[in-house]
Length: 169
Length: 169
DNA sequence: AGGGATATGTTATATTATAACATTACACAA
DNA sequence: TTGTGTAATGTTATAATATAACATATCCCT
Image 1 (cartoon, rainbow over the protein chains, first blue to last red):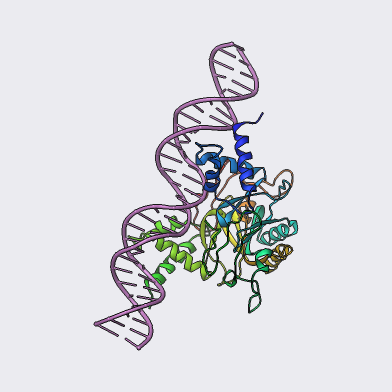
Image 2 (cartoon, each protein chain N blue to C red; image 1 turned 90 degrees about the vertical axis):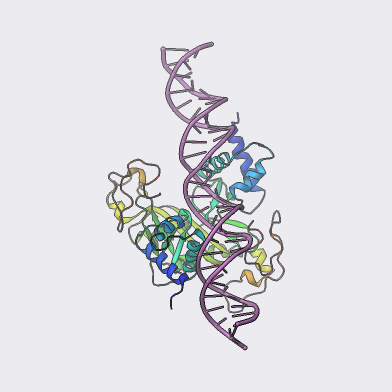
């Protein structure tokens, strides 16, 4: 039988999976109100917390927001890439990198327990629609000519010179 | 001549440098009240923001808190290690790791602009005071026998089985 | 001096997260 | 079966983090 808590987790996970964007806990809460009219913040945070402890969701620290895990229930930490243009999140498994990080900090005697690796930049799809940068190096948000939505549900779109991309809020 | 904003930045930096711990913006604000009795949050956030853009301070994303940069004005991102026992933060420069991360995400066409790498675990000093773990792997917080303060200003200390270490708040 | 840009001060509020406690459901012994 | 302790869920309130919005002052340039 499925308990209320399990149902909540399933509903939260379904909401997160609808997009490849990170959603704030309160955005998730809003969307949950359809199925759970009188839901309150602690219920959402409890569900997110359970999902995270099972590796089915991740908090994107640099966005204060949450995404569904894109791998098949991995336990190890992963690298999250965050597109500054469209907000798309991708998850990259790379044990060697985690080990490299552990190795670096081990030089001062630090023993690693949990890694957080996040990279901001421009995703492949947005790169394809942007002019290449002058002085070499990666393309930049300010160079975007004609921004356009990401893979799944469009949430970006207008984004000319804006300091803050549309998908943030 | 030194402007009010520069003075504020200097004061904030001095406060951050007094510890090797991360301080929340509001903790910084409290300490600033000595020198600036009527300071308000935006002033602190502005100072932190300026310091960060100059590479003189960093936000520890996983702690929602700020530390002084420990290197000589590096521009590149670094690896931050966070001791779960005493809260000590260490900064590790490791360009190769940043490149390894960029390389991993580049496999899907992502171009990196900014890296965030944070590692939680146990620092050398705390490791020295802890029993080694049974099944191999790093030592864990729960295994701590007789916790004791970190390098600079002691903020940790009691920490037997506590779920949340004392230095967090 | 005038006037625009930038920096600073001030008030209010938005956003994110958790504490604290009430209530319900559940496992299991008596 | 009924009590009774534990864990899960619901509910209310509030804590902690961060920024918007606007007023005022300062500086630079003419």
